[in-house]
Image 1 (cartoon, rainbow, N blue to C red):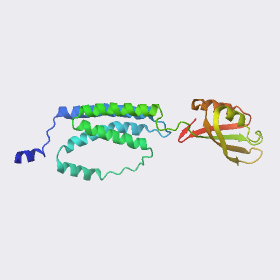
Image 2 (image 1 turned 180 degrees about the vertical axis):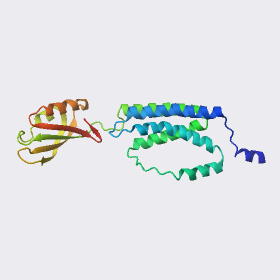
Image 3 (image 1 turned 45 degrees about the vertical axis):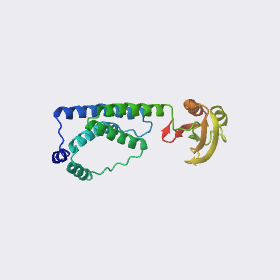
Image 4 (image 1 turned 60 degrees about the horizontal axis):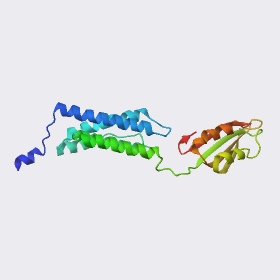
Length: 226
């Protein structure tokens, strides 16, 4: 019993084990980083964050090897890690998900559960790709915000109605404001619209831009802009 109790605090690992664990973590981390890069749709893409996913997976594997099954090391590592302060706020929930993804795969690689690390990375990656590909969480009819800036002396009242009827299932004028002073006065029209075909959003923007007096057209949905 005494020997069994002492073995709990012993963790033997060879150089080959270290290289193998870190290598598997690196391969899985690269896959996670590429998945993040391929599926990211926001405007604040960070190459540093993408690289950090690879490094985080590898570092987690090393941390779990250092701790092993030594309880004293585990408490010491917690104390050391508490010194670190992450001052950059993570705004996107998908970024948090990828951080936990990298951590969990690094943990699996660090304890030599290679099948869990590799198969887990592939399975979760494929599921996430399918979800994003088919827009699983998005409503069928998304509402867009369209802002049109035009010269006040060259546009009549609501001159965009005919084009909106062609491309939009539903449209509503929610705001009109003036900018600047005569004779260079500009007017900004804001519409909530639902497109008949979202793939033709660029065509709608192009049609309105061709109208006389129109200076700028922006089409927004959440953080995306056409």
